[in-house]
Amino acid sequence: MLRSLLLLSLLTIFVASCKSPEARRPVKSTSGSFIKESVERNKKIFDQEQAVIEAIIEQNGETEYLSSESGFWYYYNSKDSISTQFPQIGDAVTFTYDIKKLNGDVVLSKEDNGLQNYKIDQTNQELISGIRDGLKLMKAGETVTFLFPSFKAYGYYGIENKLGTNVPVQSTVTLKTIQTIDN
Image 1 (cartoon, one colour):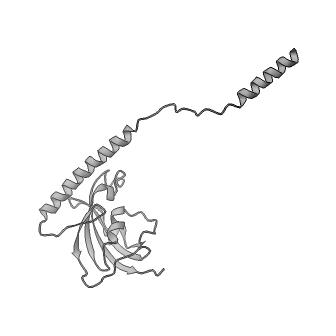
Image 2 (cartoon, one colour):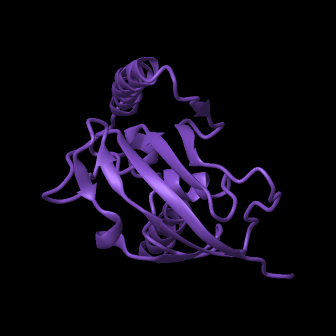
Image 3 (tube, rainbow, N blue to C red):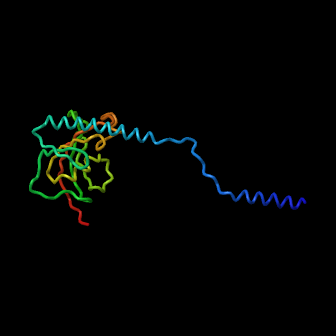
């Protein structure tokens, strides 16, 4: 009797231990509303910045502004109509640039930044995405002024003690050289 009771209890323990584990439930669950609110906030910021930039473009009616596919505006200070070479992925370029607020206040001067060396889409360099995209639109010797909404500039982070968060900027870039890298 004791033996059969022991076998029955061992069999019960064995069967109970074969149960598959249950998934742990999160202690706290969210509905995803933070992401939705963030998207709406960013759309509102973009619309406000776009309105400011469009007002600047309208005030400078004599200047021919172009709109890029990447979401910024630009005009040529000096344009090369002879050359046909644009930088391609992997090409080494040298350039200078400055960063100003849209009202013209200098945030970073060309002297602060110095001569920049950059490999198109390959250098892990702290350049804002607007300048990385803008360089692809330029030829050697050209100078272009870009108007960047904050998402193409310094965005949420800004520049410590120099530029606040979500501030659109303008940048004048001079592309000095393009060195083609043969693959």
